[in-house]
Image 1 (tube, helix red, strand yellow):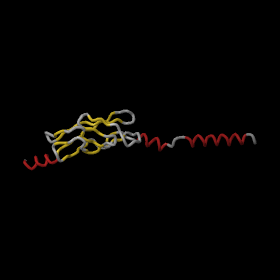
Image 2 (cartoon, helix red, strand yellow):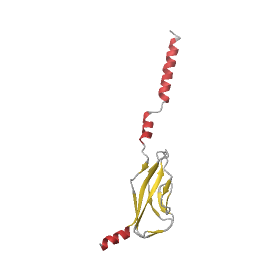
Image 3 (cartoon, helix red, strand yellow):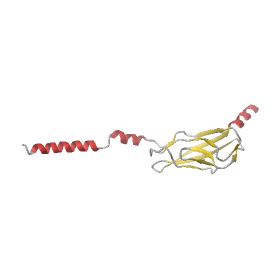
Image 4 (cartoon, rainbow, N blue to C red):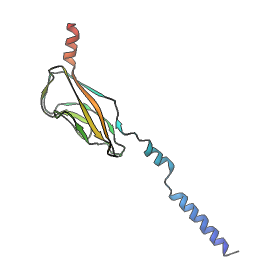
Length: 135
């Protein structure tokens, strides 16, 4: 009976060890629940002038890539705008808002390599106010 007792203890210790080294279910569930994408379905930034000079910061977008990082890779479909890794949208080269507004699509990629897109609208608030006053 003495020889069987250490075997039972060993099996119990082994079973306990296996249970302890497993990943807790809550951690993997949190990772599965991460939904990649932009925080908004569209972004709108207002400006107070018709001519936007190079380097002007227009606003910021937020993107969840599910990678745990606060920075992402962005690509603007309009070469007049650029987006920094922290989501800051700025004017890449000077432009004039002839019609009072401009829109473009912004792309970002999640940790699985899937592309996400969102429309961005830039509008001249002063011009819009003047148009309302003249109506």
